[in-house]
Length: 175
Image (cartoon, rainbow, N blue to C red; front, side, top):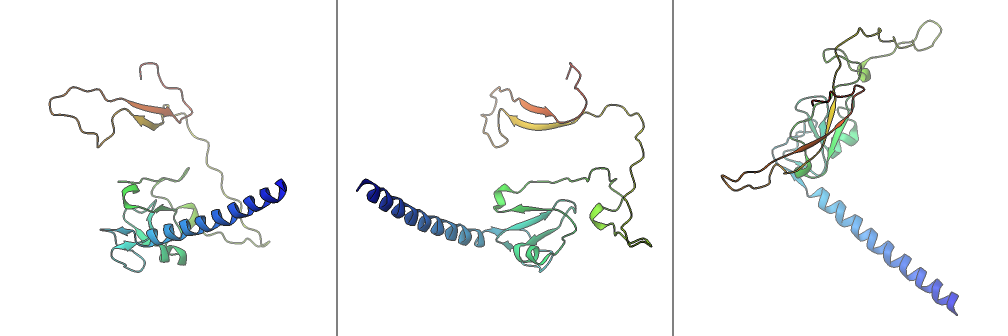
């Protein structure tokens, strides 16, 4: 008897949760389709404003496309940032490929040709780097007072930032 009750409860929960999850996903899809990115024009189909998901190019300074153009492969030579809600969009995005100078062709744009044996050529190794001054790298972690935090006029406050060393060089003690 207990096994029968457990089986019935398990089946009821499974069916109920599946139904609720399907409803949740459908509502999420509808909400996403109705999201409007005011002030942005699709550079693929010229949809104004972009509705649904907006894709922002991580390399080009001003290139945005809609969900349909992204699915068609428009501007597929660069990585795109998927922006579901306008309030989550970055103010600015800077991307530089590793071991590629900004004025060089990007790796995805370099065409490989076959040699006489029908094999793709081996990529050239970067020349050994010369000794340089240490390059310090940091990544922002958090701050004590957020940008939109209101502070009364004339009030004294202290704002602190926490950074993480993402480089290969240790930071000096006086930093």
